[in-house]
Length: 214
Image (cartoon, rainbow, N blue to C red; front, side, top):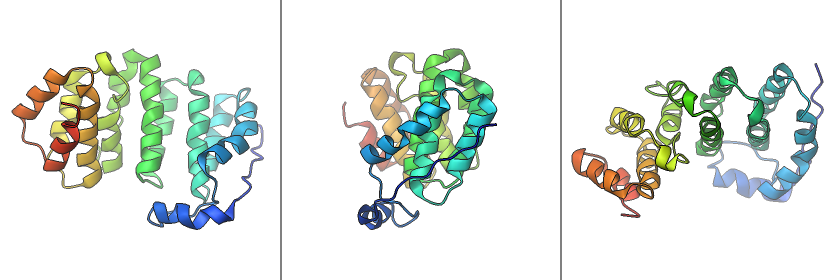
């Protein structure tokens, strides 16, 4: 198994502001996205020849590290190797949604799951069920927003089930996710979203977000 030999070079002048932007929930090295991705390139190149067991180990190692940029690069590493992934790798990746959770990591992971179901539409329900009705609200946020990139392939029942399960949840990030899901789908089927909003009682935040394009 190939050893992971990777460390970021910090840029301390940005670290305080980046931590403050994330409400000081995490420590940062101070690497903004372009610099982080540039430093990550050798890691991504090395990962191309890894077997899945080693790739999983690298992702776990990076995600467990203290500085927030390492969670980002762990997610990027998964995304760069998405073509290799099978459903059992999605199960493996799902554990990280509930670890070191905040909107930045959760939504980045959600995007990886979204790209996976685009490649494997027959597995969309199975991926959805990894998160649907979870006791962890960040996992339910993934179930709500899993289909953001699905457009005309959106499963309306899946979307409805996820929203109705959480419509009374008094949590900003859940209500925001409900509105985001509906707003995104309104670009594809505005009539369906209007009918949905007329049929179910939603929070003011969810309605406001959902109605931006209709």
